[in-house]
Length: 101
Image (tube, rainbow, N blue to C red):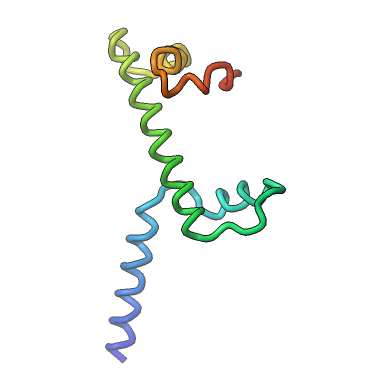
């Protein structure tokens, strides 16, 4: 009986470790992928990679925006900081005009 409990503990520890690798909901990302009519099948690895890349992109955009916030000696990131980050970074220029309220 104790061996069964030990196996469950190891399995739950592995599940927690996997959950911590990605913060975005994988099921929601998979449903967004399936909305594309050109995609028939999306493997779990592909969904995981898309989620991880998305998190890294959001983190990068946030850091760049915060840089502009800190330069103006503010503590709250505002829309103008996001716009300034997009305008100043060549790698983010594809977002210009895409984020409209």
